Image: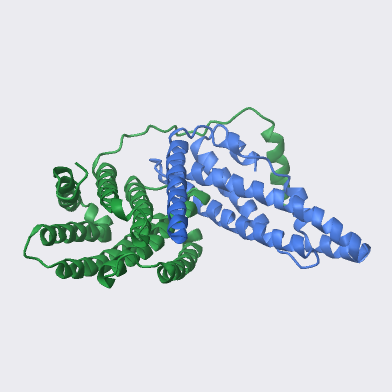
Length: 179
Length: 256
């Protein structure tokens, strides 16, 4: 009987999640206005510095082990924030690209397809990187490779810029400026 | 009114499946059968299965064992077809995007394995409410199938939401219908299998049939009713900000 009650509760929760996610997703698509306004700026230089293995090695050499762990945890938290922001921006770019997929111009449609694929790759990498960052927070001495996120982000910047240029030649750079 | 063999009972058992036959015919004529062949097969099988079971239920000379044996066969084939429909949905969602196709396939395989284990465990721990194994076993199998089915649909919905993957109108409709159906049926069959509300199991039958009817209507709406054309702006509208400065800095960085 307890098992049945648990299953009923699980089924109700699953139904609520399915309805909420599907219906809110379709509402978002219906009222998707300015995508670029949803993109949050990222200090790529600071991010690059954070994920630089040479910087890690330098800090490891210069600081006592206990202090290094404290500093490294702070750096990891900052890194997590950047990666989360990059992931959120990638999500916006996925929607941005998908809305441009049906463009009549073949170049725009192709750029949109490329943008969506790259943004999906970045979002996937961001999820992996976040997982590794949170794992590294427990063991700050372990190595960490968030570099694929950075490279993906840089590539995405270029593709978003191309799509912006194709969609709105008057203001091509402003889409990617936020990145 | 909410009694077995009432007019409403006959209607709820037959009407959704008559609609399914119509849906299958219209899918075939509109070419949707090429896009969703597994869903079409499921729709047709479900209709044939339920007409057969209805006939076996109302014909006085059919023994209960025959009904339950047919029920078992139908249940197994229906379950396999539903899993195939889930796979078809996921394929439609991922096919255009190779960046997440591989990870998606791996994750759904893992989710499927975990769900099968959970379903097996819950079936093992369910105390049969009916002394006849043919009946209690069918109830446990229904419960297990809907654990896996609802779990897979939930996984697909969350996966699509995380990656902001756009559903086509048809895949959205099929997933929404299957999601509602599998969650409601899971709750109902878990209740029936455990014997809770045994005195009111007829009401759960009505709930199951009514939910199925609603889901068939959802499928008809999303698969057959034409979508309104949404006019989208070709240019991306952008807010006022100091993005030019950001862009200069970024481009300088990226060109290093």
